[in-house]
Image (cartoon, rainbow, N blue to C red; front, side, top):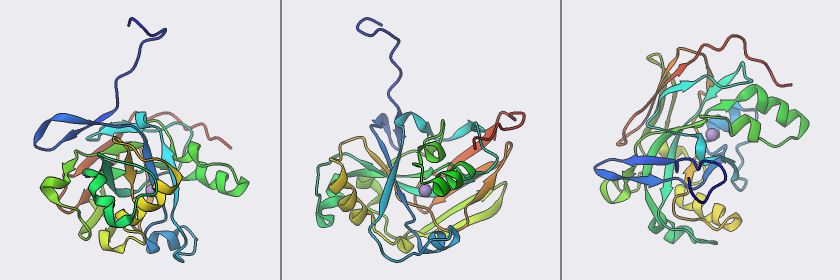
Length: 239
Ligand code: MN
């Protein structure tokens, strides 16, 4: 470990379908409320206001899912299946018309959310990091290169828990398209290769518990399967 005063950690990364090389993850941006039906179920107005964003740490990636330890400090962990966009380019103030040229590919992700912690944050006007940036909070499937699968604009997006359908929508229901999301996000941040964008979730979010098996799918992409493990005794709530 020459050169570092503590041991450096591995670069978070995702596998790429059909390629032995991996995609290095720099940052994880997420879009809030990008499907009208989900916006309504969260008690908000799906008027077409500009999209808003939050982040998760890159280390929250759980590549290709698998076993995910049930998080700390929640009794209301929610699943949110999302289309994930991986950037090979970047820049600021990107025009939506050229945004797809910055995209490497696509994957299925789950935006794991401590809904109880989020409710406290909303009530007290606190930031959302504790609700969204949790350890292991960004399971993500294998990436498919856009050169192979194109740029999906419609198609089923679903999530099953223990075989029962919980979320079902279509990519065409996004309030803000992927190029529009990149346009808005690049007005706030200079986007860079390695950045991921979780593009929002359709309706049907709900709680999961230790032992549940989550199967998240987007038509044409590799499914993402997550099993919640580590029956922690009783969660110590944060309130
Ligand atoms: Mn989300």
